[in-house]
Image (cartoon, rainbow, N blue to C red):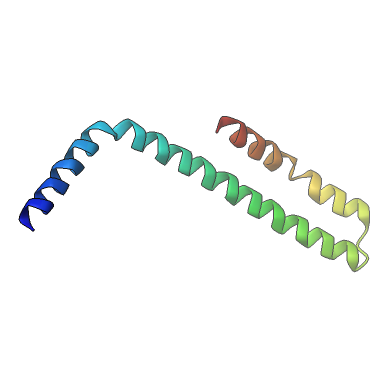
Length: 84
């Protein structure tokens, strides 16, 4: 039993030394994906709210204006996605 644990620890140490670059790369990609999902979720919430406003009779021009303010967010999502 002790030998199995010793072999596992030795392998983990070898992997740790070799994969620091891979780990950094994957962590960065994870952060970017989180940002994309976060922004997309915020935008989806706004869209949903605006759809509800249209259904209850809100002025379509006000809804368009509200959505227009989110064009920056859409560009950010596209930029982050392109960087992946």
